[in-house]
Image (cartoon, rainbow, N blue to C red; front, side):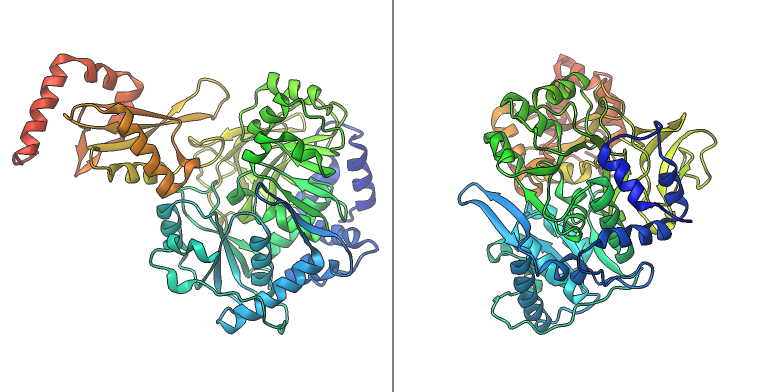
Amino acid sequence: MAFDVKRILEQLETGTFAEPGVPPWQEQSWEDPAGFSSALAAAHVGRGAPLKSREGQHYDLFHDLLVRHTTTDRIALRAYDRRSGWQVLGYRQLHEQASRRATDWARQGVKAGAKVCLLYSVGSELLVSLAAALGLGACISFLPPQGRSFITRRLAMLEPDHIAAEPHQVLLLQGFEDKLLRSSGQASPAFTSHTYKPEEPVGLLFSPLVEPAGTPAQLTAEDAWRGALVDGLLTFGLGPGEILAAPGYHPLQHLPAFLFATLLRGATYLHLELADLEANPSLLTEHPVRALGVTPAARAALLRARTSLKGVGHWFRNPEEPIDWHAWRAWVKQCGLAAVPSSNVLVEPSAGGAVLGSPRRVRELHTEAPPAPGRAWTLEDVNMSGQEAPGDVGVFTLLPGEARPPAYVVLARGHGLYHYGGPRTARRDGRVYPAAEVAEVVRELPFVRGATVVPAPTGGVAGHYRFVLLVFTGAQAPQSGPWLQQIRRGIELQLGAEHLPDRIELFPLYPRQVDGQVDEAWCQAQYLTGALYRKSTDPIFQSLTSLRGHLLEKGAPGM
């Protein structure tokens, strides 16, 4: 099957198509992903240095992402630090530092196939360590340095051979301190970059899309390379030296996909923390951003500051985020983006990049989200029985399905259009909320007699929920203020601030238990019907709770 890549790229650059809906070439790419990747690879190289990887045969990611660009003065990473301003890392500098670190790590036992966990915030240290691990043929994992329980639970699931982290982060590595790699940065480069086989794992990733929370998903070298190729050229339309930025996008969902797509194109990844953007929105205009990912929080900050973004060549949003039509339209108008191409892009890290993505096109805000080019997929019935959906609505599933995490995205198609239909189960802005981990942390507090998390429908956009933490305090005298403070502090310390629930409810009651565990179904039904609130204010139930408290204090049998 032949693909006219030049014509495809011309259509994307103009932002218009001859007909609405999915273009024929994209449908053909679903049927022949390998042929489509091969055609893209030829166009990707252009006049630049050739790719060392060969579709379906072998992949040298270190060479294709770094070495090809070391003869230029391009910037690989531009990251903002509120203490010292913009930090810049060029491709030549990145290659030199990564080579020294790889040599250093090789002497410490890191070899092809070793599982290396990268425990960094987004910045130059993360990028150098990522490149070093790829050069040695390691299987990498990402973890942001937040929450002791969050880190140790996932390290236990991963069972890494080595951990790369800043020296002061060793306090987060309870039980894994001996896995920490030491990097002097003084070793003379002396290694040959590893060539991955297509099915060889290049990543074991903790995606916030995978259920249950904390379950690692494997990224193969072929998926990583294909995803970077398609996303760099088509999804984001990056050229050498151009900038991709997505402040506020979840790192566990979008890394390493964003980094791979950027580096393969010889472009620049601009990292800006959402808090810094909210404090100073003009930071986003200090460098000419080509492709900009926008979250509702970033949109609100830019709208408040009336920030002009006329230099942006393409903006995209995550279809999982709540779609407030009025706010998005006001933002587009206020920031001068009415004539700028936009798209919806859903990234799955274990698939290597975008799995759903509407073509870049100048148009009104929309919910279109067809499967990304170059991916084989199917629609399964909502029961996930393995059979295809009988109609035009089903669960979007990448093929081969048995080698990937369980699908969860509901996709609808009709009249040549595909629309994101929300998650199959309760999610928080499309991501799994670690309800069991949150409840476990809270149960450890001395005043807590039981805790569980209840997902409550918002009543707004389909598929969006609020997660309410129910805390049962028994017959104790209420101390709402101090208790709430301890709960929030405990969750932040053990899991990170991002996992704070949307709401915390304290009930002076004892929860129903089954086999010594809180009956979560009972708690959910009681809360959503208002029964818990009525019982907590009813004099009879208050007396029964007080009596039960006295019996428990005396250690009465059966209680």
